Figure 1 (cartoon, rainbow, N blue to C red):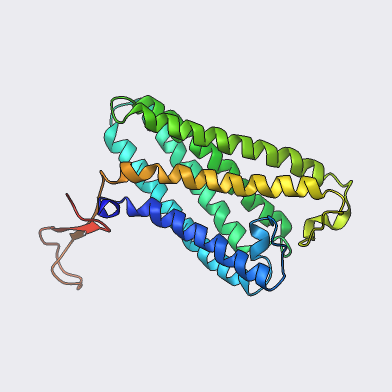
Figure 2 (cartoon, helix red, strand yellow; figure 1 turned 135 degrees about the vertical axis):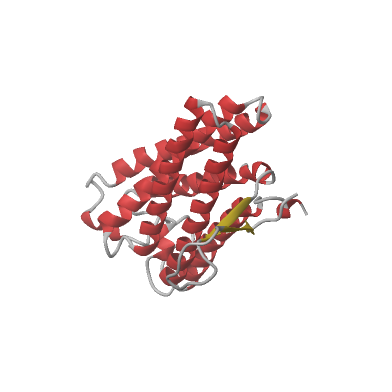
Length: 265
């Protein structure tokens, strides 16, 4: 099967698992009337128990899957371009940005806005802010590697997704800045229920729609890794310094190589 080739299952698992985390917490929160059905903030669906437990646990696992995906992408680009200095530097920058974005996702998962608002917002900024910069770097790498490494269509698809994400981020920043300027009430930060007649309702809806749109652009971007990851597998190498675990004189090194999460083809 195509999804069993190489490590292509990693980005697939990342997108499916993250989408499931959002979906399950949304269903629970709406069913228990903790949020409104019409486009709540993603993190609002994980603010109140019991959905916050589901949201936090699943999003932490999603952060680990994202970290694994980012690392595999880093190793792949490095292996394909061992002597290209610009690509090597951009690849390292992408790895750092990706790690910071994953850290932000973990902060969002574990610190709800009703508990520690500053930490929660900082996590959101890391997740989406570093995330869009990661997309930007990977899009540049795709441009530099085409057509030698892959086709031009890969670059154009990633560029389109980057523009989609950029428009969503810009819309969210503008509307949320106006919404939280203080003109719409002091309790707006903790507000979970909105009515059409509420002051700032339109700005709230645009902001939440932009947040969901931004998340979908991330999903699409990681799905573009599927074909790339069909061409890579990783191995774990164990170097034994002795035949026992006692404090004895060193003996010849024994190497064992084991495939990591994949079969070779």
